[in-house]
Length: 479
Image (cartoon, rainbow, N blue to C red; front, side):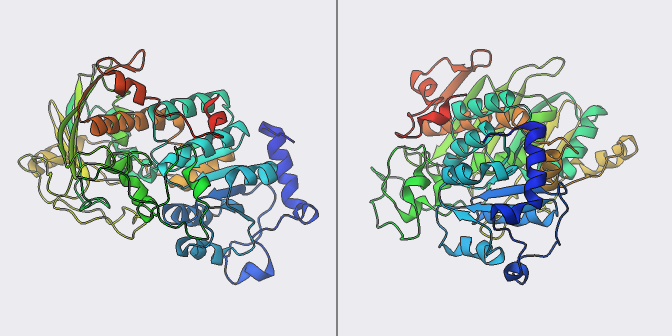
């Protein structure tokens, strides 16, 4: 049975009333009343029937954040390791929600009862799950970055455009907070204009810092934990033997599985500049520094220069990205104190990594200089004397009507539009994919924005697509 659009919504409204007849377990039972956060029973159509794929670490934070909006009925859980401590924390709160290890089985058995899905899994697994959901007409909230390769992101954007009734949102949560509305208002008022350079930096310690950069192979295979389905965890990626350093966040450090510090933090630091300065894709990506470069995992420190061309009446713009504990960019005179915004949400490991310079950006225009943090942290004009001079000229900034999770669920109900849909988040994620390719090859890439090809390096151009998917996963690459 395949349902889309209004027919899907009508079915789902009725499904809420008929859940007893269909024998679908839900969280709203006497057995779960003592453990699940109580929101009371919803009337038909008041909440979105949500399945959550990836329910530990960041995925677990997403589950609870979506649930706490009061706009979602959680109807299914899916995770490749239902026995891990980080997944059990969520399962204990919702013991009666149906659970699956394989997202394909979940969609086959419950697809008609699912309106929306959250995807909080490693970067390499975003693509196949999202493509299947889009094909079924299911709304998608997927963590950042959208996917691991340039081509996967391209296909996700094409599929979202084809299935244009489906709501999409990438999980860069700050894109619904104060910085989003401030940047938009200041750009529209001409406060932020004629930007020529942006310094973006994330200098906290990363999981792979301290690994041996002289390794010649992937780590040796270890016994697979009894609760983990390693085959599904690998997904589209070619075969690897299980190793503890591939899972539970460690995946982010390997080129085969994650997009490193750039894909992780770039989405929280560069996002508003990318959107409201209409950056699109770069024409050049140049590695300026790659300490500890090796072909398997990310450098200990990277400096990457992205060059963007003129856009209408906006001048060419360079973004220089810095990561690594001691790879600190030069800060301008009058910068002041590097403050960590207390509103930045904690990471899956608990708190923002300590750094000599807190995550953020410095934006240089022809007339003004701005400094800002990460996520929803607002910009300030520097030095302080210039900020005082400009204070009376600054426009009023509206407050956010909804956080990122509520924005997604309200969009599923037709009440709002998502702020980080694939047409906005896709090109941003592709910038990260290009940066990662430059990191892996430790070279300069020249990129043709029209043909979307790398013109100076055949291997790099082939990496836009990457290795073919593992056998049995090819179908997700068709739109």
